[in-house]
Image 1 (cartoon, rainbow, N blue to C red):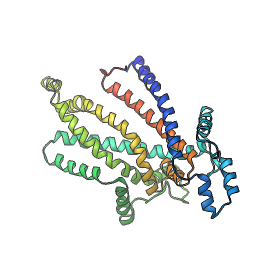
Image 2: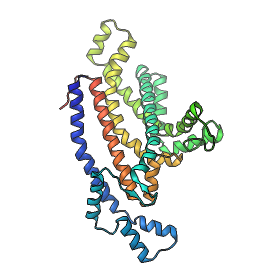
Image 3: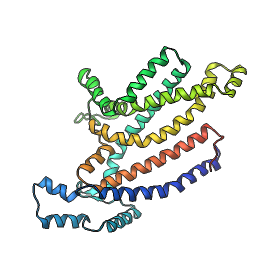
Image 4: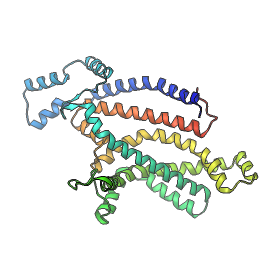
Length: 327
């Protein structure tokens, strides 16, 4: 890909990203104002009781006594200064709190999306090359099952099978507490803890990518340039991988970029089921504790991650098909 095309894709994405991010911040802030209760109510409930003077003091301390517009302007002012605010519940800056949880979520999502794409494309290719035969029918039935079953149920069943019955994998957490592992042993231990959550997130999307890859490959295989490539004497493997599969990857990569936000949403459930220390679990805790500064920070970061992933998808598509023009 030429440097001019690369800069064109980046410029187009950045122009769209800035107003999108601002709109997301304002919309999220206003929607959260509709939620009943606030951090002062939750803290008073946990304490058992609180006087009106104490509640007023807490709301003033957290800035919750200001009108909604003033709170929004104050929050935008903090963002302009590079600050995500302060968490009264965790008694630390939101940026530091998110920085602690972000690596875990990125690792989990990266592994989940990689598994979904690799397995989905591989299974879809097998289905397309054996269309109408038993491998195609068998994989199609399996894909339909994983597409229909809720993700949290898959997670629970994986725990029952691989943790409770077989005892092969841990049922939760990010590492073995108190084991004192280091080096390769620590890496393998974290990989074992990550496998079940990643599989729970990935299986739903494996089904989607497998069926999409199959349908797109069969459509591309019927086009004239494939018959031309076959007539030139190219091997079936070369035709399938360099011509059919490469063109079939365009809609798959587009859908993967769109699904990144869905995987982020699914991480809330999966991280809660597996007690995984990530952004999804942090967002759930922030909702329950009405810690809206933390929740706004998580939502903003997730929005930026989705924008970055879509930019990467644009670059990947421009590489897969040079005919795609940047407008």
